[in-house]
Amino acid sequence: MSHILEVELLPKDKYNEALLANAHPAQWINPEPKPRYNLVVIGGGTAGLVAAVGATGLGAKVALVERDLLGGDCLNVGCVPSKAVIRASRVFNDAVAAELGVTIPAATEANFAAAMERMRRVRAELSKDDSIWRFQGLGIDVFLGGGRFAGPDTIEVGGKYLHFHKALIATGARAMHLPIDGLAEAGYLTNHTVFSLTQRPKRLGVIGAGPIGSELAQAFRRLGSEVVVFDILPQVLGREDEEAAKIVEWALRREGIELMLNAQITRISTQGNEKIFHFDHDGQAKMAVVDEILSAVGRVPNIEGLNLEAANIEYNKKGVVVNDYLQTSNPNVYAAG
Image 1 (spheres, rainbow, N blue to C red):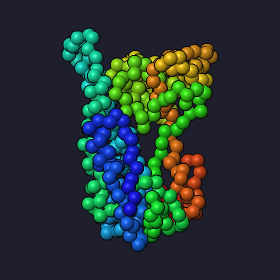
Image 2 (image 1 turned 90 degrees about the horizontal axis):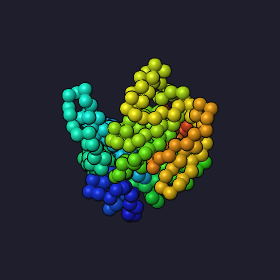
Image 3 (image 1 turned 60 degrees about the horizontal axis):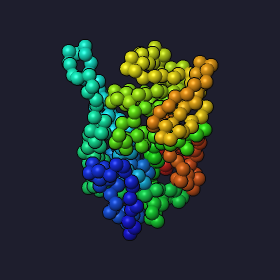
Image 4 (image 1 turned 180 degrees about the horizontal axis):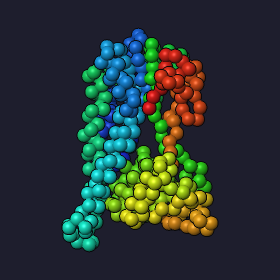
């Protein structure tokens, strides 16, 4: 039996400790594998958890493998924390809206630290539904660690071999890294790290005006940050209908967000604690100074380290290749999420 390495989650407060105790407890010891599972799921996010619970409910012997936090993006770095922060920002924005007939002192500021603490509390409370203890109670064998294929019908995790009739790859995606000169050296946040903030950045630069960039730009602006958003496309929400995007753009500008659309970031430099965007906009070379950078430019699949070749599974830069039934080139392995 092997003990599980801890996953670090910042800040180290009682709410994140509660989340870790549910989603990746340090004291967890992986069980001894059954001779063969009807289903082995790699990835404990939304797709993987639903599949594991559904299969167990039908009487299948199921193993679930997760290397990070159970609950995946939705619970830990996506839907739950983002909507909790957005909720706080909306309440404050409504409270200072004079047209609603509410009068508060002009110098009133949002309590950013309190809003982020509430987010962590809400996330910790909801983590009970995605906890390792819940799935253990349902009869699912949970293995914490990085799973990799050791053959067409075998997955290895932490030195243990899980033999399966069927398997599901549900490893999700992570934030894309842009090869902008100086970005890595300057340091930046993604949706995986932005919710660890405890102090409000006075000035926030957002790279990407898609759904994640736009919603967090608005939330941080409402909570008191000065926000500038960069995108190489001529509109926010570049994949959406132009007229609908114009409505969102108007709302963001009305709230004081500076939008640099059709902008090409050439490099990022630093001066002390300041981070400086150098970019071309409307044919002119410009600069913008911020305290923090949020990169929200898209996602890349989490398939590294899965050893897909050992299971004869085709993949490309977009992820695992599947047919209309989410079946991979190995007919006993599916992919979702």
